[in-house]
Length: 312
Image (cartoon, rainbow, N blue to C red):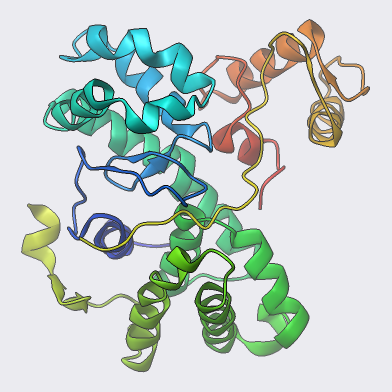
């Protein structure tokens, strides 16, 4: 179990990668034309294309004390559709930057990134046998940046499991595999993000498995006073999981079928037919309510997938 200080150090490393700041930049808006994530926003840079930007902004707008909520709310339908026109909407991006100074937005982002990225990262790390603070930070970085599952599987195929190699050797191999993948990716902008793996390689050489402070990441010092108190950012998520929810026409596919199977296994009445209709929507909402930890909105995003065991 990581301590609170180790958690903050692990997140600070990724914040440096994303925004150049250990505590992140809550108002940072980034867009690169060849970034499959499209527009990215916030402390740890969530993306329009993944659907997670919609979840973040909806959470913010739902808080009555949000300073910019009434101004951002008219954009929510466009964000939900992942409308590429938002990449070029100057007013929308200006609102996001301004909202980053709102303490309510900062609180919303902290809770959001913990729920949607950090908690699933802990589950994924535990699923493969990674328990160290540095190893968990590597997993968290891949969850934020994208393509964790692909790189995990590639590492296992080439080198073996954590159980067979030991955690430190497996993490070294994973970082090596991911570094090579980023350096040779068909999207040349991803080549510029190799620094992420180079930074982890440096921490591994220093044997910082417990993320003992101070740390220096890309020339930025991370220590206790800093934690108390521009790199290139390109999404590596090539095929992000769909955000499943009730809509017209109904969503269909194998991902819907797996969702229904998971719900059925847990005792929720749902027909396993691969069609996300009203029955599946009701089952999802009942599951979210019963969990006691999820927002009851009928949307199957990273947090709900994790609770259902669909993401590890």
